[in-house]
Image (cartoon, rainbow, N blue to C red; front, side, top):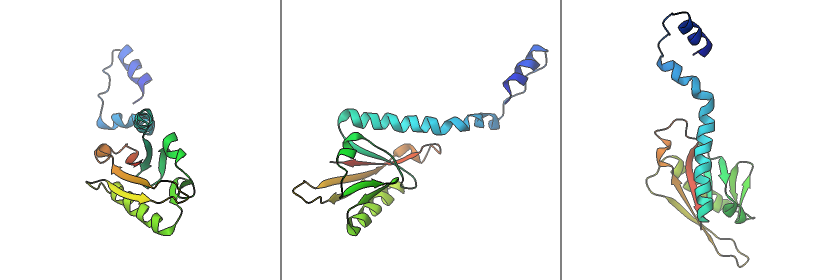
Length: 148
């Protein structure tokens, strides 16, 4: 909707055009920014709680990995481009299955244990779908992977 045209019409005494549903879509360019802000808020909450968290988009791309999660990255679990990668093929398949289930909206959290070797304790990864993701087409965040 052209705001200048609406105000000009009102000044001339003409009746302002009524709003239609399509006028509500004028905000579409800002929707990804709002969705990103929502995801950042969730990421900040995990950060404040000291929980290692990775936020994942519908296509499996990592949107954000907080500092706790990044501190656990190494040859056994890492970010390659925008995708999580494990150190071996068997673990990579398990990670993919866990993420796919969460991205498809599984009711239960998917879980896997990742052995790190070198005397380091194993990591437990849990992937959970974001409940509001189905109802909100502008929601970028589709799943959260928590690591402990």
